[in-house]
Image 1 (cartoon, rainbow, N blue to C red):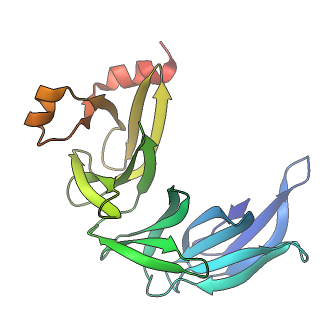
Image 2: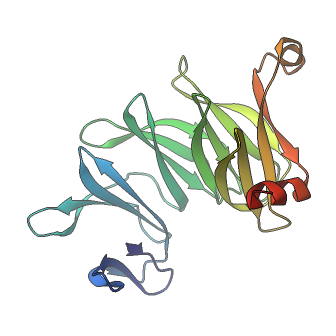
Image 3: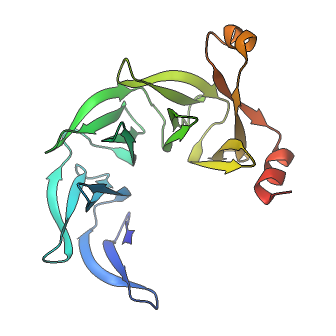
Length: 230
């Protein structure tokens, strides 16, 4: 387990059957905002994001049994959050920025290479997720509607798919219950909202500009009942 700190020590912790204890100091006083664990060629990696310097990519050293700095992500300052995902088995990253464009990067065997920039002014949260074989990306905004993107194979990138009327989300979660897929948006400026995935019939798809599905907001009491299993 890694514990990032905005004003202190960023530490790797180890479980010893009784609890988590300090294992490795990564660095201190760099205003870290987010981190993401992932595997590359069956080796654990950690990407640590900071408000004061470029993101650091750590790689696990099996001999020394600790994380070592592998590289830095270039031109990736002021990143608020990072999430990884796979497209046809290829590792990708999405770097969310509050100011400027967010970035999608692809692993090219030796390094991450930028493949797409996404407008994301005011974004502090994101979630790449798959439903019914389609890859989506939910991205928050503090200044306007949040947005869902859809991965288009032909373009090899995300395309705008749908706006969500929720402002200031700080986290997204996907919940599947009773054959229903719900996207939960925890808002900093209001109630947590739930959006249910809906597959459209042919007539509705025509009215929806050809889209075969969408996400519809459901009533708060329905969302609470679904989450509680009632």
